[in-house]
Length: 558
Image (tube, rainbow, N blue to C red; front, side, top):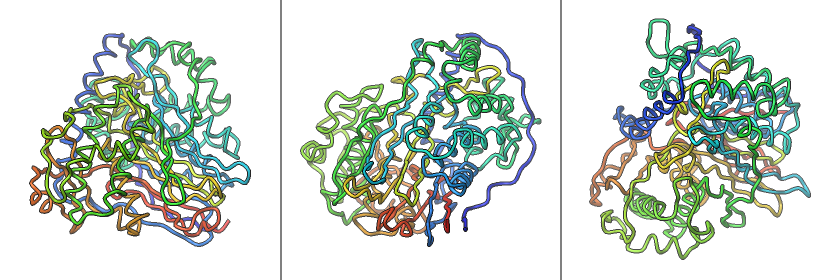
């Protein structure tokens, strides 16, 4: 058997902390810091003006057994170890998530939730469906109900092979003994410094002994979180929702002013639902339905790209298409992600054609001239992306979120769980998530799976990557490396990133756009199996986005 991966960072030492105590007003006040992070997302990303740096590799191999691509390297390695131990893609996803709850709590903590698209190729059980465990508001309105543990339990129960304890134990060990802070987490810590310093418990966890922020290689040890993971491992996920642990979480949350109740926990249920599907060749693309309304936007972008059939001025086309789709989204999406008309109607050829009416190749359309007003819609661009598949044709693509970077910026005392704010029209939430799978539900073959972060810019980049690979026949590696373009309608500016010699600034300026460079525009993790799995799993290729600091890893030879 062989495995291939990147090595994680080395280790250093951090200082443990002791939680403090504050009331409800202090919890509510922390949300203001979260709003500033959302508003500053693009501005902070622009601090580095050079092209994005390479931080990954494309992998394909003979005798492919399974693979995981994740935003955080240590978590991806644990997912690979679970596959190596005989687990399947669902097992790998659950184990990867729980490790990320310790190594990437900025976007994947236990206080948040997420959404997955799952495809199974097993004979007589072929199916594609959405697993919805989004972090919806608790009854009190300020905080979200922690959802991820129950979501991963549902995934494991329905699709997994390995015992539950085996999926949680690695995360418990990592939280207890500590793990070197990855470059991915260090980036989030730097971005969230103001929020982290505003709360004594968060500051104690994410700062060094000298008061500076935790950096790459520093040891992050979380014994209280390890205790919680240990109880989830030994007693099962329901311990967090209806057991003594759940009661402890409620008491701890209420002690800092977060109105979470045991009824909120007991009443939370995950949902297996029918996906949003659009035909793509002889297969279907499967996406989440609203309120994870990013699925609608990805489907619309695919329809736009397909109708255009390629454009000589790719940057200008992407700017115009993204501007129109973003402005259109403001017309149909509600603050909680719900829609004011059926999703199928929004992704119809007729609706997409109406959105693109007036497009002129190679020429900028002023946002003010659109038939629908360009309105700025606050969104949470912070999410974690994980994709896992195996040689039996089981594929899982997931996004996880805390509804804001580092959630609400508060830790429930004595649990190590960072709480997530409730979704709201101020930009907290999960509207810009759209994991996707391309598969055939007649013969079960799975061809593609991906997930993205970075808000609307990220999910539209995911759509364009898929189109480049499947229709333009651009290799996954080359497609991932292309520069990206995004126009958010308000302000009337086309944003772009630079990848090597691929600099779209000239084409955008020539088309008449006001432009601004960003360090990155979204991060996409993808697996592409051109000849399908399970029939030809050796054709599968895995790629983490070099704009991030994740990892693609696989197992072969079993």
